[in-house]
Image (cartoon, rainbow, N blue to C red; front, side):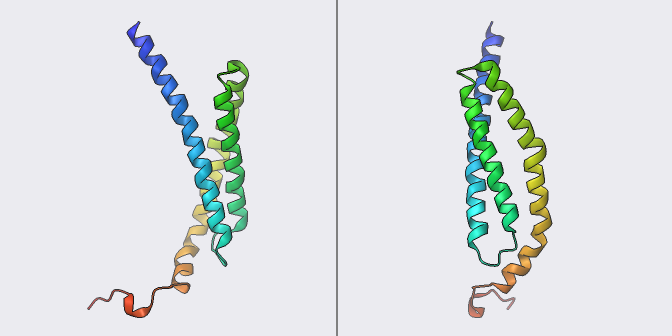
Length: 125
């Protein structure tokens, strides 16, 4: 009896933790999109940033599906499972790989756009 109660409580906490995870991921991806679009000449492409925005929309849909599971358990648990699986297995790893391909250009971009005056840089002296 106690073990079953603990299992049910743990499952409930995990559902809410996953739900909050998708909300925060959507917020982070929207912020990354805004910062990548606003910087002129950014080494991160706009297509990549827009793909992140699509993933943020999918995360939002997953959040709604997770919350609506409490209204209609059978239907929305299947929808949430499909959305979560697609997002975690296909879209987000593809976004991360695309980010990894673009990362070698970032140090070159930072060196060209250095806003630090020469007298404020650290020297080995």
